[in-house]
Image (cartoon, rainbow over all chains, first blue to last red; front, side):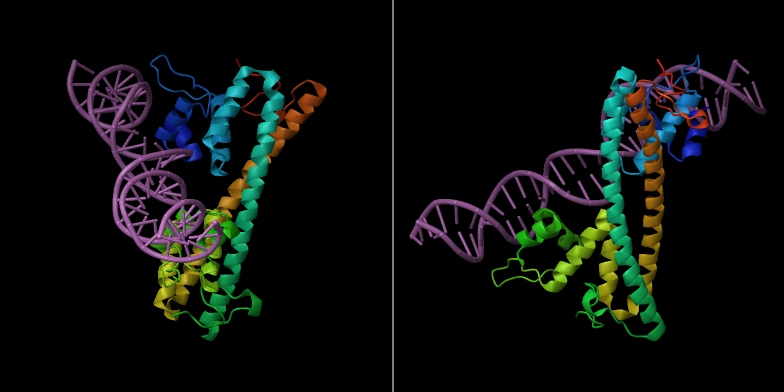
Length: 139
Length: 139
DNA sequence: TATTGACTTGGAGTTAACTCTAAGGTATAT
DNA sequence: ATATACCTTAGAGTTAACTCCAAGTCAATA
């Protein structure tokens, strides 16, 4: 598979894929005799994992570390496992923050929608909000 | 409330708070006669919202836009509502990616843990994984 | 065979979001 | 009154993760 095909499959740029390979986010990709990248099944799976983990905010350092450990062989499995577990904890913590933000947003949207409907802004008594305290806008 | 207290309340640096104010992520903060920031209830709520939305990955531009609209008055409520709804969609999409990554991670961790236990690596038939195809490591 | 378009590398440039520095002002304890 | 710790601003510097560029190579087409 050419770099272009992999790019459109995972929606990343060729520069990004070459960068990932250069810094070690994915192992070296197979080449044609002419030196052009020809992604194997395995190469593609590495790209899939890398882009998936990246889009969940896993930093590049960790991915590089993971690939490094993988290349050292099966004796690094416990370390890899630990690395993944720590990454999982971080992502779970992140997701919690997302949920908090979503809750805040939902509340504001609900109040705003009602305001658009009824013409007046009404915040909950003990949940009034920085953007507009108790139906009275600042200034 | 002093900048320091606000910082420890929301776990951000003074530089960050001053930066937020400077670029308009939060409105101008009240000052003492000496020119030192003295955060009001409302100021603190803005900080809370800003840090909450930021930690869910909402970009600074949007927060600035939101504050700008807020300061223009109640007639911008429909626009603010639209802005928040779009932000919500983006965060929901992000969260979905998090969940995909978590699923991938959980699978790998499960296989690795079993490998540590039993001494051999076994990936699912049609779910084998770039890091180790079918219990055979590359290289 | 010549052109065209995509590929290669190494290295420089960009962007968002801070983070730090310098030079000085404020406030409280001795 | 002076030392100490914290505050102020304007502006420069940093970091992660790309993204772009120049100069050249490869591959398919006219």
